[in-house]
Image (tube, rainbow, N blue to C red; front, side, top):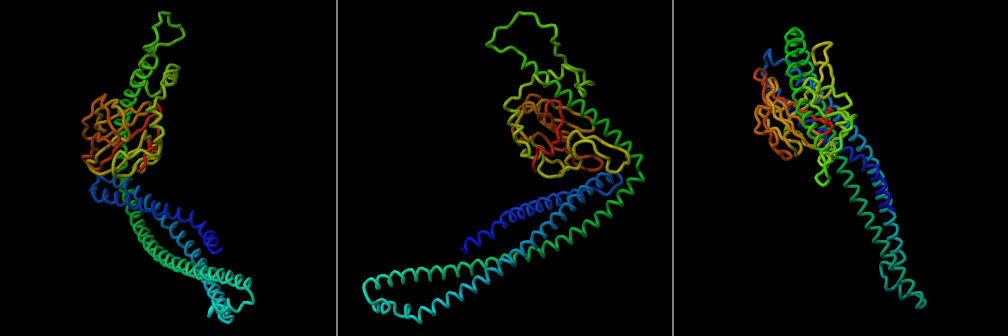
Length: 429
């Protein structure tokens, strides 16, 4: 009965304990990310040219610290709930121990009064006949077993009580440490918010220069987009041709081609961004979903990061500019701020579909994984060539550093045929 009671009390604690571990892991990960960002902020020189990079980094740092504060607050709430739950269990176990000890003492005293325990042999010999001796012997055996079970139950309950008290003290200590950490994070956050406002005022004073810089970046980014689309379009055309090629075991037909079948043509570079004609749709449908594509798709959310350390400084899709009003920018992938000259690794095995040097983005490597493509841009160096095979986590280059600001940022994209995907949902740090 006691074991059942303890089991029932432990049931809600299992789910809560899992949630507590998840919060703790999340807190540790956020702290590691914040430490990485702190190092990057310290390495960024405080000059006029680096103001924007410092602002973006600080903004990401503030978001992580706010998330960390929320996580710590949730942990404190979990600790308070655990403290209350343990206190109730301790109180219940204390009452159980006291009741069992009182019952056990009463049972022993009654046994001695009846002289069952002081002289069991005399108790047996005082029986009136053999049948009564046998029944008394059976009774003594059951009594001894019951008394031992009661003693074990008392010892087990005392041990459980001791563990609960220890857990309660440990939870109190963790809560105190979390409260101290929370206050420290809030204080640091306040300082960072002040620094952010100062940087924003500096940026607002030099808005015209930042608009010119943005225009140059957009031009470089458009050149990158065209290069990526051109390479992927060419690979898709090859896949379509391969899929439509007659199989070796089938005799080639000499029948005339139907007049309603359009020939496969390679679109010009300035048209690959709008594949809305029927031929393009037919080409997409003709591409088989091979084993590589299926295997790659099954790894969604489990693929490794292309760099060891860092954080996503700009996310996927259309978003407001961090400082310029009424300006929206489109990101076809994610930008990962990382350490200077950080090693870049392939997130999955595949074939090099193309390598190009784009002014403003340095080297760009495109890897093909069946019908999927991964793009690694802003590399200072790479020793890969088109057609090379690469393994998962193989080094494909190093991240470039901005000559003026010193910032190191990898631009990473993920495509499925001609469709851009959000890499954040595929890679897992």
